[in-house]
Image 1 (cartoon, rainbow, N blue to C red):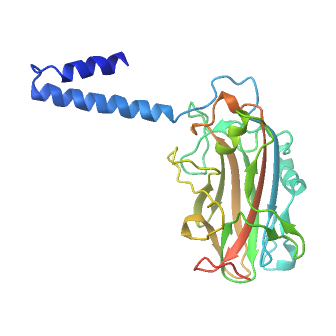
Image 2 (cartoon, rainbow, N blue to C red):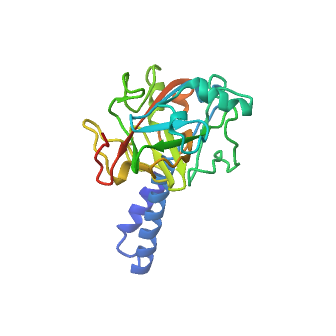
Image 3 (cartoon, rainbow, N blue to C red):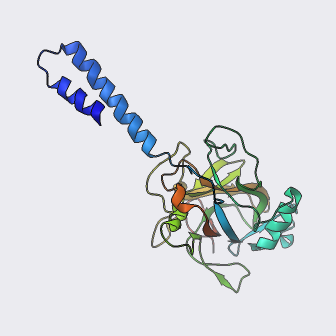
Length: 273
């Protein structure tokens, strides 16, 4: 603050030349911008605890939309309406880990594909202290756009499932973890990243949040497009964004749960019945 005080005193000095005054104004603007930028970078300063001690993930889809951890071609009967933790753990077996042991910690990304620590070191997926990544295949009975939904869906045609949400049972301030999480969807349509409880754009990676109240489907929350009976590979990445203002020491050791529900819509954002 001493720098700003001295600068202000100089600005009020009538003997200062107009050129010097302009230079000082530019200097103050740069310092202000740097201080604003720095305030959005959080990260952990001590790492005595893992990032997230418990991670639960449930994925369900709507009646006309199915999913699998394997590509079964156009044989839609081989796809299901849900991906369970057991299915993800089977996938993680190739990395010699599972959801219980896979503790995620702060990383960052500018494209949703390559992740780094704060010092710029590139990190591998599904390693203890990095981030979760798995691949799955979506298929639909007709041409459709796929969206996340906060509304309940039926994952087997009969049983209802709650909508998309990220939650925690950890008390405050650990509960702030739900604002530091990102979930990205990478496909041949590009990257789309959901930022739960988004308060504003805090990183260079574009993100979206789901509307509160009644769900409205639009291009802003569209994940990808499916052609009828044509499977699409989607890579799901779940990480704790180190540059999110809420990703600080207070959230270390938090417990986290995530549930993803998907719905099929037409080009106008109307759910396909």
